[in-house]
Length: 162
Image (cartoon, rainbow, N blue to C red; front, top):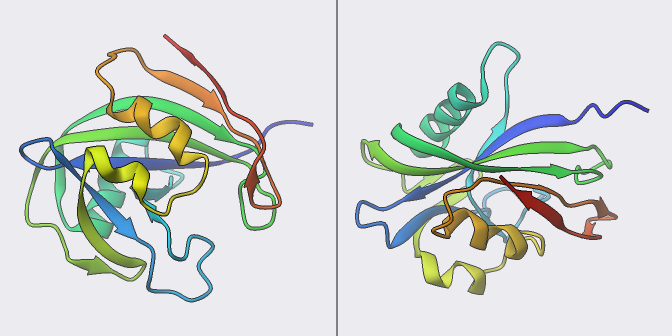
């Protein structure tokens, strides 16, 4: 069976001093699959855009800022992650330079600056605890992982670096 995932971006915006990351606290929509969790910003790629353009668009829509420097940190395949078991493929970015003033909230929830060294203390998807250290580490190599989900729970995690 061919692998036909939903393609998406996920970005972590660093503060100007690079000590904090702007996260969304998904607390605005009661039926939200992510309700109560913190996450980076991003979403589905549109048919006419590349992943960088998609990441920039999502950050502009969700945070009101323009990305001027971003780095692809890795990719993750999430088989079975969707609400109805859909497969997702995510391109994970670190945004280190940007212009504008971030929104305080958006229709999905509150935007909050969180110290990078405290992110793992927040309510997150269990799987995020595995890949987030790779997003923020000093290793210049990208990571490329697979994290299957079943019934809303992470089943396993493996990755390679190049």
